[in-house]
Image (cartoon, one colour):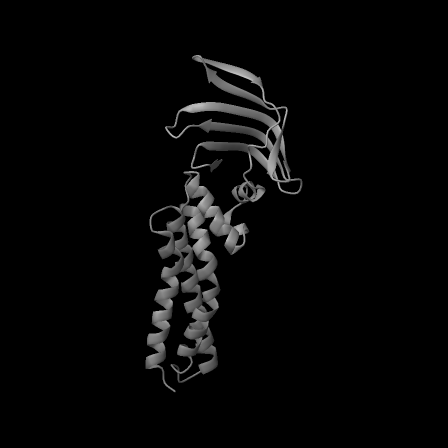
Length: 207
């Protein structure tokens, strides 16, 4: 579902074909600024032509004189929402680039749809690359803490800390997707905790 024109136009689409830039199974609901229904347009298919959607065999339902009337809709270029809007709504946020994921969250918010899971995935896009930095800090901080089997014990400690980090990240992301905690906290909390721990270990590490 996609909302446009400040919510006065709502698209319901069964399937968007990105290769041919075609919408299938379209219902377009138009209302006024008071939320009153103006018309409903139905079409089995629409193709993107230059700057608008060309509807195939469209019909329109309108309220006139207190009755719901149906007629064939003449060719129109009134529907101009870009194809990318429908492409973003047809996939998960984790499958999109960072820019498109941000636009995807905006589209969901504008459409009045749930955005928590998409937001969590969007923030995770930025927090996940820091995992290598966290592991590096933990590995360095573990280096001088053992007197015997230094290499083996440092490696084991680093792997254990990394596993704990990823487990905590999995838990906080799951809680964020379910709405128990804010998406930002779900994505960034493990990173901050383990960076602080790594810095504390570094301060007390033997050189």
